[in-house]
Amino acid sequence: MRAANIKLPEPLDDKLTEIAKRRHTTRAKALGEALDALEKQTAKPTVESLVGDLIGSLKGPGDLLSDPKRMAGYGR
Image (cartoon, rainbow, N blue to C red; front, top):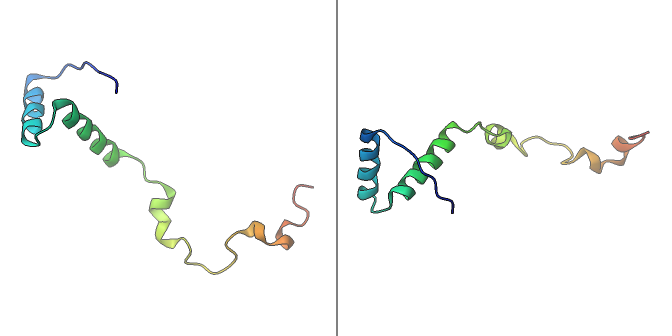
């Protein structure tokens, strides 16, 4: 694990200390968990997360490449 030195305003530093005490963990771990949570909240959604419930809901070949007729002449 890498070490990082950061400067925090005193009120934010006090909040970090309080959160760490409440969770019975270190300040570093509390800060890491907060950064992970922030990343999850602000991450762009993936295509799968947006349309995942539609996957497999349509009828037809699962893979168009599995049909030799569709591949006839491909790459020529």
